[in-house]
Image (cartoon, rainbow, N blue to C red; front, side, top):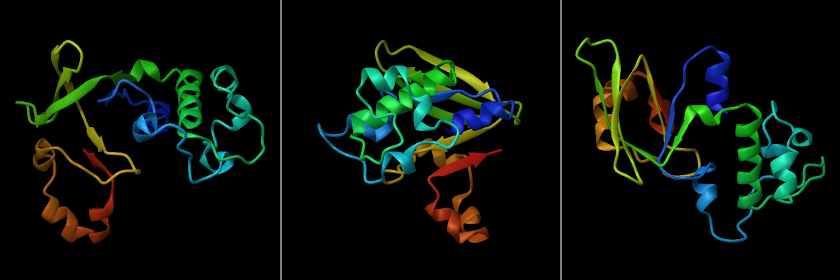
Length: 171
């Protein structure tokens, strides 16, 4: 959803996903695992269930407005349909591990170094801003290079509620 929001605000977005699947922790959940919130609460307001047709029908996901508890597989099918509907896959690089993030020599941009999981291919790209997202359904685990992005002590003193945030936007 965040990718869609940023692209709608005219930002050029790149999302690096370590795994090879859309869905985060839900894509790798145990067989038969179900969501703890209903499909009606889980679906995005900008993508109501009735718009989830092709992929959802193929995966036997209920696209009707009836309350059900999706399995994690059904939720991932919904997410894939969302990505397909809004043409977001062009912004997502699956199977890509972020190796480092550092300020560029010009001091205004960020360099993001990546390594592809399959063939080990590496790349370095420059961006004006970086957002580190660990997901809201797991304990945050920021990689070591994240410490250099912000002064966490200063950030936490300025706003103690920030300690609990899962996403860190760095201008």
